[in-house]
Image (tube, rainbow, N blue to C red):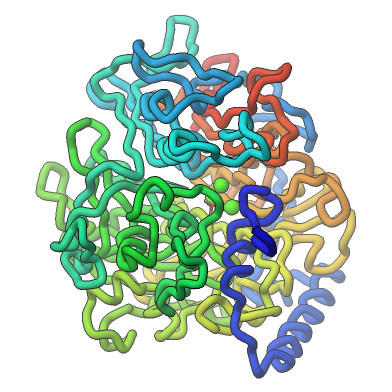
Amino acid sequence: MTNRIDASDQEISFDDYDEALNPKPDENDFDKILEVALSRRGLLKGVLAVGSVATLGSLATIMPGEAQAADSRFAFDAVDANTLDDITVPQGYSAQIVARWGDPMWSDGVDFDHASRGTAASQEVSIGDNIDGMEVFAHGDKTLLVLNNEYTNRKIIWGNREEGKSESDDDVIKGKMAHGLTVVEIAESDSGEWAIVKDSPFNRRVTPDTPMVMTGPAAGHELLKTAADPAGTTPLGTWNNCGNGSTPWGTYLACEENFNGYFSAADEEHKVSAELKRYGVSSKDWGYGWAKVDDRFDVSKNPNEPNRAGYVVELDPANPDSTPKKRSALGRFKHENAELVVNSDGRIVVYMGDDERGEFLYRYVSNGVFAPGAETDSLLEDGKLYAAKFYDTGAGEWLELTPESAGMASMAEVCVHTRIAASAVGATTMDRPEWVTSNPKAPEVYCALTNNKNRGVKPNAGGDLTPAAGPNPRDKNLYGQVVRWRPNGGDHTSDGFAWDLYVMAGNPTIHSDAYGGSDNVSEANMFNSPDGLKFDSNGILWIQTDGNYTNAEDFAGHGNNQMLAGDPATGEIRRFLVGPNECEVTGLTWSADKLTMFIGIQHPGEKGNSHWPEGGDAVPRSAVIAIRRDDGGLMG
Ligand code: FEO
Ligand code: CA
Ligand code: CA
Ligand code: CA
């Protein structure tokens, strides 16, 4: 096909692919936006060049005095940036592979075959691909590990085929079965090595075909009804699960992110509705071909099917027969993760980012309160939904999304067309909100704003302007930043908050302006595109990156993607780990005794240049690794 952009080439991002299919509207006031953005950039440039902390403070960026910590809280020596096809951890720490894409979870499964990269049948009983969010659950004396399997690199999973394209229905279904969730019991040997427990009764694959139930305001709404499910209450499956969350009642929250890229239409001229377009759904998919084997993914035949994805899915890992629940009360967008906080009054607060250029940050507040042992089902079904507004003064507020504020007919509609509702109330367009995490030691919340090359350049998919301002202060933001906010009165249900930037990533060896990064970024710890973000129980902020690893030009010296530790009080940031070539480091959880930290290595060799973890000529495989201190000390 001519002029077809093939996302399977992996040379453009999902966002770029969606934009190419759905070009953003022209903005009449474009010159004006640019003028404002440039003057702000000029201001910041001047400020950072002279390092005027006082002026920075007034712009609500870096807290004064955070740059150099006299006493570090970190018990490890910084790891240098590198481009090794390996995991690098500090001296005194060891990393070990726990589970890889394609490892069988039952003893009648077959070991991963590097020549064929498996079949649909082998994939369905094996660890899924491209591990992202993850959580360990202690269940009695069992350790259950739940993994998101976000997507699959077509040139890798179909690398046995010419041009890395599917050649059979089995190839397509293999790709489909590599998506979803994996629940696997793991156990530690006497020597401290973690491994999969094959045949555990808790082992389970949740795939794009697993029956689910829709809950909350959208359940049963017209927009959710399909020929296969005329009641609009029993959607099938989950896919493109990015970050995660967990609840104090022992369930896992899987977040559906780029769900749009799996839908297509047999007729490429088919036009989708404006609402579907806002979510990037079009007549072309990203090359997965699911509509070829499953009509559900043909939008011309099932125009409501995309309305049944884009939610937070709650899964009970302790009950392998349980039906996962899609929680429409938490809104529908490209969910990154779901950071759940139990407020001091017992209400449940969930913070969530929508990861696309110029999209929004959200908060959910339950109407009911959590009490251990009491009913919890309504807590993620019945509540209020908000989008964040940030002011340049350093203040912010949560704008409630209701039928009235959004100009919609019902709360169901708000929960399906959440992006459109947030645009209607004038929420702040953000630089791609990725993971959100709350500090267990203080009422403050952090969100990674990974990057946004469109900042100050063009509006978001809804036509909302994206001037450089507030927590998104840099035009054409290559590097990303971490914003944090403190709810007024330490009350997560308060509608007001104060914000600042914890860090602006950058490259101080190339740039002496705002693109050099904030004062807590140096040649020794520089990185780009913060994505995974999670506090440990001691209040250390772990930052994982999904950025540009060319190690050249604007990114010279950044090396491969990595994980760093941040001290929220001093601003100190220290590099802890570097991942193998062309990977992203994402997902973070700990064993119940906190002696092991588990992280995910996603898409090693996404451009064809890794053989990690097995080396030689091996196919690169996403994997979970366990990291321990050699002296047996705590890891979180
Ligand atoms: Fe799947 Fe926004 O990262
Ligand atoms: Ca991410
Ligand atoms: Ca990312
Ligand atoms: Ca990813």
